[in-house]
Structure formats: structure tokens, C-alpha cells
Image (cartoon, rainbow, N blue to C red; front, side):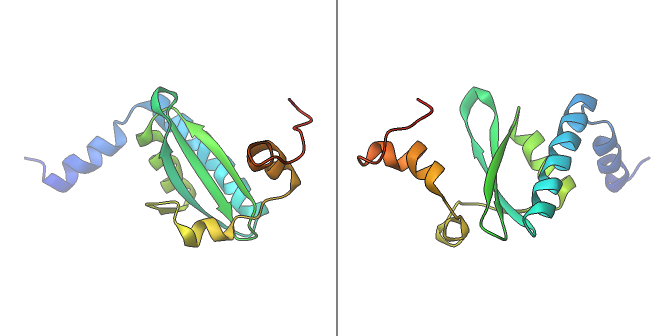
Length: 120
């Protein structure tokens, strides 16, 4: 009779192959971002039926995001990439983000009377 540990190992190896491939692709992109920005931390944010956003914050303050089709795929990708996940996008993580003119124009600038968005 197999032990509980053996059953757990089997469950992990019989995961959805599509989910594994998607997670591996996302993990590769997370790794590339981390390498380019001196490391990275992340946060997973549900975005409804579209899936889960993987928000990345580099050690240098750069930020970016990826979208996974499910929360489980996002968590698996983060795990495969060795990404440290934060449960909340709290003040400590947010304080590391460096924004530039593009972000101010696209997000806050329009809302607070900043310059018009040239891409609109």
C-alpha cells in the first residue's frame, strides 16, 4: 500500500500537462525579468475570468506583470522561477516600485489633470 508521501508525489507528477507547460513558459519570463533587474519579488492578484496577474517588482525598482490563466498556474510559475511572493502588495513592496513619465501619463496623469496621454 503506498504511503501518503508517495501519493502526494504521484499527484504532483500527474498534474495537467498544459498547466505545466504554461507555468514553465511564465517561469522563464519571470526568470528573465529577475535576471535583468537584479532579482524580483512578486504578488498574485486575481483579475476575474481573465485569470491571475503576476505582478513583478525588480530589486532595481522596475516593475512588470504577466497574466496566468488560473491562480494555480500563476503560483506554480512563481514556484518554478523561485519568485518570492508577497501576500499583499503592501507599502514595503510598493515603495520599491519606480515610476517614470510614461506611468504618470498613462495612470495618474490623466486622473489628476496631468498631460494628455499621447497614446490615446
